[in-house]
Length: 455
Image 1 (cartoon, rainbow, N blue to C red):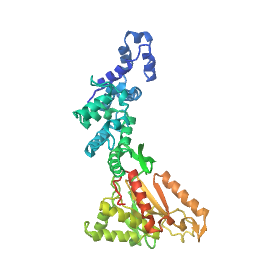
Image 2: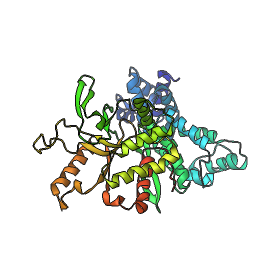
Image 3: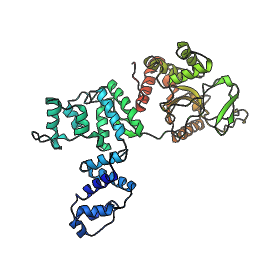
C-alpha cells in the first residue's frame, strides 16, 4: 500500500521533470503557488516540494489524477501509486473491475479471436512505435512476436498486465481493448454475445456497459458507454395480472407504504418480495407462487399453473402471442433463469372507477401491458398498441395519441425504457415470431442478460 509520502514523491518527480523555466507556470496551472523562475533554476525538485508542502490528501489525490491524465505514459509510476492509495485511482473503471474482466477473458480464452495476435493488438496499440524491451528488436512488435509466438515464453497475463500494462492504462485504451475483443471482425455473433454478456456483468459494477452503437453488414458493433441512471427508488408494490373488476386497495401502513387489498383480491396478484439486484427472474415468480399456494417449487405443474394465471389477464391476441413466443423460445433454453415478463402491471392506481369520476380520468394509462425488471433501477415497459390506443370506433383520435405519447415521455423521464409494438406487427404468428425473438435478444444484449437464440 502506497503512502502519502510516495504520492508526494511521484507528483514531484513528474513536475520537476519540466524545463526549469517552465516549472513555475506548470505549478500555477495545477493550482500551486507561483514563485520566481530563479528559484526553479536553483532546484526544480525543491521548487515543487515547497509548493506541495501542507497540502491535504484529497488535494494531492485530485492533483495526481490530473497529472496522470495529462502526462499519460510518462506518469505510469504515479498511476500505480494512485491506484494503491486511492481505490478508484484516476480511472472510472476501477482496478478491481479490470482484474475481474481480465480473469474472465483468460478463462474464456482466445482473446484475439479470428485474428493473428499481432494484428489484433495493432488495432489497439501502435506497436511499431512502442520501444522494445529486448535488445534484439527495435519495437514492441518484435518483442511480442518473439515471446508470444516464436518462443511462447510469455503467457496472456504477462502480455496484457505486465508488458502492455492494461490494468493501469487510461480508460480510453482499456475500453478500446474491450471493444475490439467483441468486434464482429474478431469473433462470430454467438461467441460475441457470450463475451459481451460476461464483460457486461463486470462493467456494470462501475456503471458501464458494452452497448450496440453501430453495425457492419448487419453484425453489431459494441461500444463501452455509461449506463443510464434508471429509475430512482426500489420496487415496493408490484400489482399485476389484473382481471375483472378493479381491486380495492388501501394503505395499511402509510409509513412503510404497505398496502392491503380489501375487495376483489383474487382479481390481481401482488408480488411482495424484495427485487434482487439481478432483477426479477421467472424462477423468483415461480418460488413466490409456490409459497403463496402451498405448491412444490420444483414441479412443472406449478410453473404451468402460474403461466395460465398470467396468460388469462391478457386481453388481445397480439399480447397473447408475444407472451407465448417469449416463453416458448426462452423457457426451453434457460429453464427458470431468464427475466420474468410480468403482464398487466399497475403503474398508477386510482381507487375510484372511471364511472364514479363521471368519466373524467385523473391518471393516464393506469396499467402497463408488460413490465420487465432487470434490476430495481432498470425497468422495461413493453406496450402492444391496439386501435384503442389511438382511435375511437375506428376513427383516429389525435387526443388519445397525444395522451399516449405524453405518458411515454413521463415514463422515460422517470428512467423507464419504453418499447412499443404495433398490434398489426403481431397478427401473423408464423411470420412475426422472429420479430419478437430478435427484439428480446437485442434487449438482453443491451442489458448484459445471457441469452442465446434457438433460431
